[in-house]
Image 1 (cartoon, rainbow, N blue to C red):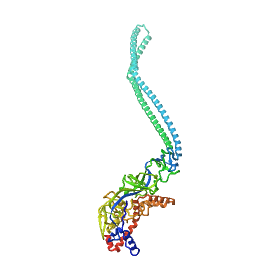
Image 2: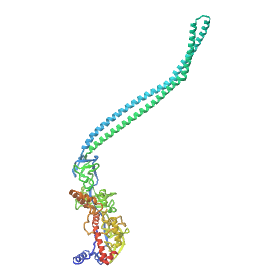
Image 3: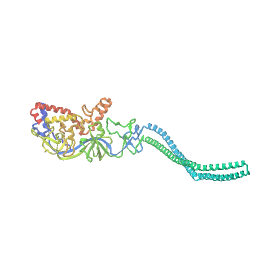
Length: 634
């Protein structure tokens, strides 16, 4: 239950209507009349309350099916939708959901079939060529081995057959020649004796002398023949035969190596042709599969939901609703087919509230399309990193995608519905609390300013959780004490904070609005709760029941906002239709904002004007206020 205690603020008016308004405020806030005796009645104050306090975080998002089957585009590159089943239609298993353009794939398929046939023919040729090379290699090796064997046999034949035979023949001729020579000499001697006795004529004696000389010459030639055979012909013939044997042996080795190389080359060529053939076949099969994927069928009976439904708009990506003629990319999600009747809510939690939210917390949800109905759920998962699309649209905005599982009855819910919810962090039955703007940080410690009549006391406090409006006080205050909603600042402090704002770029867009808003909204835990930073002025409290403004991060950036130059330039250069679409998209983001974002946007929008007003007030106080200005400086 949210508590908004009465706050009494009295303002000094000149005459007339101002007095009447002060009187009306006094009557309306009678519960805080005791505060009227404060020495500084122009300061907004708050009386420390004690009672029940609910800590919750407001979120908004989209209803999605809890479990669903995703139909994606599996065709490579980009393709065009020729047919898509209407969204929201119930389909049965095997029904056609999407048909994509397949003309390009048909042309590629014909070309690939030709390549496949050519590579298959090359593979067959390489296979047959390998057998020819193997056969030729074996034939060359057999021939070389035969030549080598013959060379060895020729050498052995010469050493063991030819040369011994030739030597014996030469020796035989020498022996015969010696015999012939001896007989010719003996005959010559006898002829000489007979010639002296005139038994033979001189011509017969000369014939015998010629025969003896011939026999002597034959003997000499036979002996020279033996010497030539042993000293020259044997060595030369043996060297030639040994050389022939070595040449035959080396030729055999060359033939073997060349045959092996030819076989290896033919085998490598065969493997290359085979791989090329298999690759082309694989491409052909892939094209056939992709051609089959141009028609997507329902794997089960379900309700058709387009993937773009409920995704939200943006200035990047293809977020337009799916339609015939639209171009889609590979792996793009096209259709969701819910597999159960259970639902979940996909919401975004601002980083300032991330520490409060954890899985298992109870959530109360309401759908915009079902007014008056509420649903219960629990936080299921929280993304470990900020949402990339939100960060792209606004680098200073960090939100975390969170899934909330809806429990109980889900009748009436449909995928794509917008929803809002409150995440219940904790409920206190009896605790002290003050508005978050009453707390500032000094030297890192949470501090409040307690008003006691004309005196103001600076007091450190221990903080608990907050709900972005009220913060729990664990220690440091008592019920009934009065704290300032706009803590006073000295001149030195104001100069320091002004310089700090200039260094940090005061007035620029930040992740959660102003620095003070971040300190008041984040809640790490009891005793460590952040409060509005003393670095920036504290905004005035919002009126009870008033609707908080939208965060500046959810509307087109104004001049001077950091990170908005590109979007403003795009808006200025856009056509009227594009400007209308951009305004509609920003309006959708405003409708889905969280309370924290709206409050921070309001503070960011008002900060330059508030700062100017506070500066004028300080100058007026120093120039005209006298004691009043002195009290503010103190």
